Length: 286
Image (cartoon, rainbow, N blue to C red; front, side, top):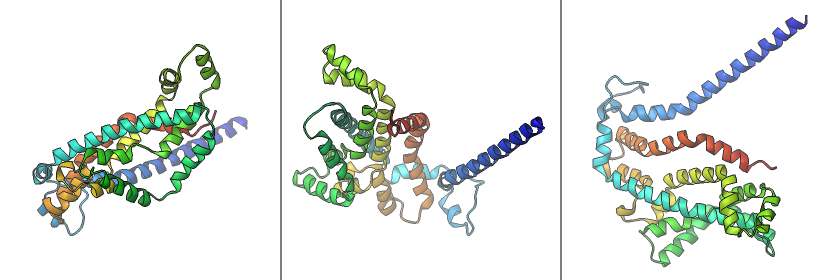
């Protein structure tokens, strides 16, 4: 009787596991389908795409002409280079600011620290549109429109990332800090020798998320840059649509989207485990 009960429980567990895998497979296909459709459309010719009265889920005559066209219609390589510069510099300065601010709020005791941190968190309540208006007026008055510093400076702080890293720093036992101070270790040395190595997964996560954010940035670069020499890939897609290929050339537009999406996809595939580890550590106490 006990053996039959065990077999029944094992069969129920196997059915439950199979159902979960089936649902996950269906969900995965739903998530991946837009990417498949994007790539499929990008390898269809303009005439073949327009001839489809009913969308086709495959093509028998793929072409790479769309990819060649997007690099000749607009200076897409220049836009990619500008985006790399913007992303690298913005991410570097943001990580430095975030690490130092999070460390100050987590470990350095000063009068009114908790009140200041609460007021700092309250900044998350301010609508992003108001911040954009303020940043725009400041950058224009400083004469930094159509410059990299105008693109970069408003993006080097993040209340959420500081909060996330501060919570991670707060999980490090105080005994390590006191022992380091007894040995005469400075706060900066303790930060770089102890805190950063311990909290590296969260810092890596913040870095990757900021890279993705910068790469996909559209509103601020579109607002502050009028010179095509400073366009990012997000602006380049709009330029491609309006002045390069025209609004009707959907296959070429999809080819451009594939080109600018590849770096982010590769980045996520390489570091997705670090992202998950960092987020889970940042949200767990103890």
